[in-house]
Length: 178
Image (cartoon, rainbow, N blue to C red):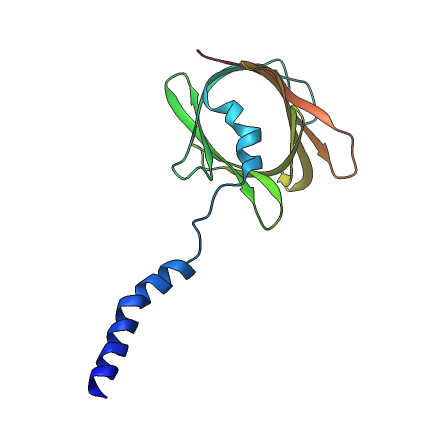
């Protein structure tokens, strides 16, 4: 009887790790839609554009910047570092919110601002939006990105006061460095 009890305990001790290995949850994988829409952006891009006259901007100011995009290890987040010349001025993290079933675009600027946009993609166009406060008043924001070719996309950023019309604040294009 003692030998049977020892054999049973040894069997349980030796087989328990196998049972745990079989029942452990599988490793999470990034949403395939996140990669399908955003693998395009991996690399270094030069952005050029101009601000437009609107209730939110004087307009006429040309700008140029560079962005370097890469997948964070694990593939769940696309990270973009933004540069003005050689100066690092911002970081954006693009992800997919599994619960809300929406893309997220969170930008952290060197001056301390945080901007969170939510978006969707349809074909070659991504549309991002957010509700914010500007000078204490609610506004809506919308950013549209259109993929033109494997090395070129256009972008447009618009704002609208509550119950008001959309105004283009800035627009431009971005070309991928080889």
